[in-house]
Length: 278
Length: 286
Ligand SMILES: Nc1ncnc2c1ncn2[C@@H]1O[C@H](COP(=O)(O)OP(=O)(O)O)[C@@H](O)[C@H]1O
Ligand SMILES: [Mg+2]
Image 1 (cartoon, rainbow over the protein chains, first blue to last red):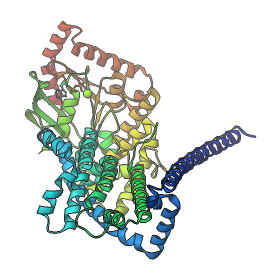
Image 2: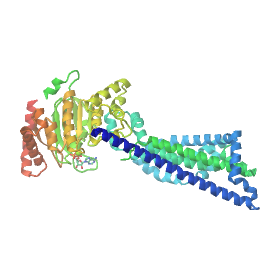
Image 3: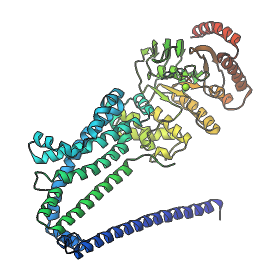
Image 4: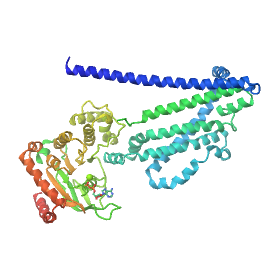
């Protein structure tokens, strides 16, 4: 065998070992995730059992896993689950769209101009610390419909992480990139779309991921008021109707969708990130 | 450097550069980084700006390329006033400063994309330049997968893709190992003379100046100024090897460099007096 062939064989073996290690890591991760999920279900099941066995709380037996999943299946089959989820998704989509449309450009301005950063720092930190739900009465007065008031509340909750992350991302840009850009004849829009946007994409998306988390949490209490659709309304409605299995099934839906949204964001961040490990 | 301008056909030769009365003071600094810098560079000439660190070489390069506006004085490129950066004068820095999310092909074609050239043309030009810098077949690679020397080659191709008239280099190879550095020095000089562009190299490395330049402008610090102009009249064959002629040129440049660094104050004073005559002599030659 020639030296090259030996090298090639060694390389192939090394690569297949590395692949095996990667596959091993992934299946190990999935194994632990399953264990975690099983523990969660067990705790839920035990909790449901205790509630059902106690005569004082037997009315709440619907919270246990078995009735919950039964109801969930029924809700999915009848299309009810989708009908109450869709308005919530629309609201969160609109709120996030506003937050991105305002947060990203404002973040770029704050990252770029020191004066803007210094002037806005105190007011923004002040506003950020106000619970979005505290805006509720103002939102209800300011907007003609409940729907828009909810979108406003989501936007207010979501804009801050997006804004601060974008500004942070901008400040990490290598100033030499602008020099290179100017030197090669970049126009302002080239600077924005070819240099700035890809450079900050990862940080902006990290901000959006945080924003999605906050917005999803704010959504449910925001839907407690006024509207007659959405997941938050459905929770309230199920409680008033004493349908605890429906209530628990809705909670499951909220959790699953929140988890999925976060997963999508995480994939997007991974895709936008250009930093390679050494 | 008539050889280069003869050899190159079809395009107009690299630009003539005139630096007139340039002084520069940074806003926060009390002292001038540059005072009364005057010189000319002929089309297709390769000139080295040599001097200890802090003597204003980079500042002068930024001013000449239009990236920095001088406090006083002006730069003319083929008689036209330089008002800002443009793809006619491209700059390469110590670091390649590639955009890490781009492929090699995207990086090299960037300037042409900014100029709004059609896709087909960009593709062809990228291909041509990657061949020139000996990176054929690397089009689809992410720039982060390349070695330091390869990255600097991509930066070179990116700079040349826009058909510049002048290539400015600010200690472009000092972060590379010796072998890579020597290879790139020779390649850049060869390429510049082949395509017919003016070359301005900032360096504090004497052998680099001798390998790459037809003339060295030696600068002195505090405030930054021209101290001496040393011609390097060598055949290209003599530059690459450790020939006696190259050694002699290095020694001459070294002496001037040390004089400029103020190690010998008397020598510096003597040289300073000599600069005027040298400048006059240089002017007489044109
Ligand atoms: N952006 C800047 N702001 C203030 N002073 C600077 C700046 N850049 C360079 N200087 C000063 O100008 C002088 C010349 O710097 P520079 O041109 O970088 O020298 P060189 O490239 O020869 O090492 C130095 O004293 C340096 O401290
Ligand atoms: Mg420098």
